[in-house]
Image (cartoon, rainbow, N blue to C red; front, side):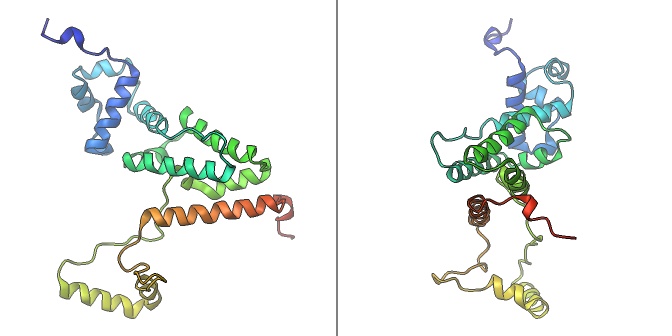
Length: 233
């Protein structure tokens, strides 16, 4: 027996999944394979299949591990604060695991931890007095934002490194799309650049989340129902 072999932690599903998460964090999800995961764990690839049937089941389990890192519902918090804290915790978790958002969106069925998280958010709205009707539409409005991320409105390619080429590109862009440039280079009330120095993704996420939560609160307080909002024929 090799020295230390007797002290090796036994292989189990949790160890496999956590090792896979760590490997994806280091190398990216595209580089993750059963073979390099087995190498990380010091076992032959066939040993993994006792714990995960295939790559898809491995990904489902990795999602479970990541979602399990989201903070539980805060005790005693008012519904808006509770939802905000949970979603921002989800955001922090998915930022730590940059591959996870794409994997969550790729699942053809929701793993139990995903369903439990969604059920918990729904329960928070319901405990706050929201009707099942309003909660249904609230969850649709939150969309992927409930996981702490959003999709950009449009791609923003990097400008050329050469100063002359960059100036020429910006000049052409300003001539063709003056309102975009006006917005991007506007000076905010505190004297800083509103968008010209690059958007603050965390600020933009919280800004949109707070707009949604304020809107949900207004609808809730007004007794909104979808029946009264259906347009007449």
